[in-house]
Length: 299
Image (cartoon, one colour):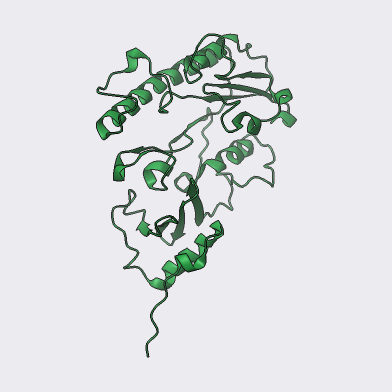
């Protein structure tokens, strides 16, 4: 976008400069027309306070009739995020209590707070003229386990609750965004670039949701270094094979009828097809001998 004449503006809570070098993935410092994150805030002591977003919006220049990209990142729903007292509606909601009631209440309070910040962001952008002829994408970077299977958070598993993310697209024109059911996060950038009429770089892994060639049949998913999953579309079914390399456990689910993975069908599905899924799983450089099962030979 910078090469196409867009101003690049990043207003993000959280310490993006030092969190796994996240800021460097946005571009060089010289690329930014405006940048503020939790590491350089002048008003708040905790870098995970979403009021930093409002601080940035106060000093963001008025829209100057040139193309602009604005990137916001909220921490309200994240466990590290600062919860303001007026949004602590659901109780008990202890920060370190890993039981379902506390964790869900804290998460719901975060969603309530994030919703309020999104409203304030829209108001500020409208007052500064940025919402004229603009596309707005609201999404998450991961799901969240809320006690399902005894797990909390988003960095340990590849189950639906940790992978499924919301996406809302505000487009002032009557444009149909297709293939949403099978979209992944890497499809957002090529979709928006395509929507703007700009060329999509060949090096990008994602696919524009406007593409007539969109025919995704297989996606790969990984958490940490030991849990893996693939999702394969076959006719009107979507099969998901999960593998834990630490325990050796394999699970297989049909997501269209069992989205939240309650009925493991790995022992009832055709072995040849299951082994085909295991073959796809080898893209993770896993040892085939740990994955495959073969029918016993008859004497």
